[in-house]
Length: 344
Image 1: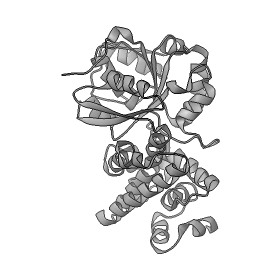
Image 2: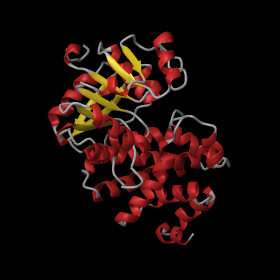
Image 3: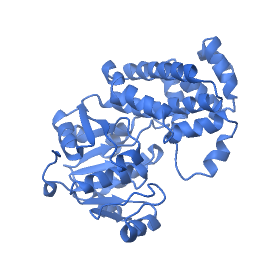
Image 4: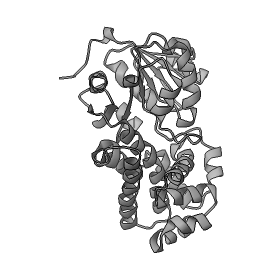
């Protein structure tokens, strides 16, 4: 039996027409909700209207007629009960400023964007809270977990977490999103959920590098295990709950992103491991691998908090300081990276 609330009770807006935003909008639309989907690209708005397709970001998936695409930000934001934010993390602050102009005070702000802001080291919900001042803190939430957009769009059984300091809000999100193929758990550890979702992208780049270098499964398993230790170490320092990192928003999301061929971060890392330069890869791609910008953010955050994160720091030095992946691996295997990378 499919769980859902009365669709007429909720007005839902989705900000971001990339693969994940489109997949989530379609999931809700197929449940009967009318979804105002804000898309930056005008041609994609017309394509969804006329063909019910988003060929650039979610090719081959027929979209529900209940999705109403728009370039009009005010229309997408105004008078919504839930506003789902699904834009790249480095756009969050500017998007939040626009949301502040039109959002209603009772709206639940739900982010599916994953990242750490470089200038402030804030998680996405904290950036949103700082800018969108008319919304109560209890109305900010996040969803995260092992979930590739294409598999959700194809109705592959998936489980994620809805996190909010107010459990009644988390439960509401759970009911709105839950289907017979999309299970939603809840927790009240917003910081832990977001830390897990942000840093796993950086570790996934490292995992891709391991496979690009053809180093084998032992190496990758070791990297994922130690990557989880880094995520947990940082999360606990920032006030997260330890059990979060053993669940869907921690280990689950990390394992998927580090091993799945649908992961943009893993694929980018694999190409770097095979010898391609970051600039060559990013110049020819419209799809953003969040871990690239987040590797710098995580590096700066780890220094600010004096947290040892050798794998994350290695990824930063490979991407931004032109260190050879094999040289970074040797340092990871033979000594305490914390000091040697600072001397590089």
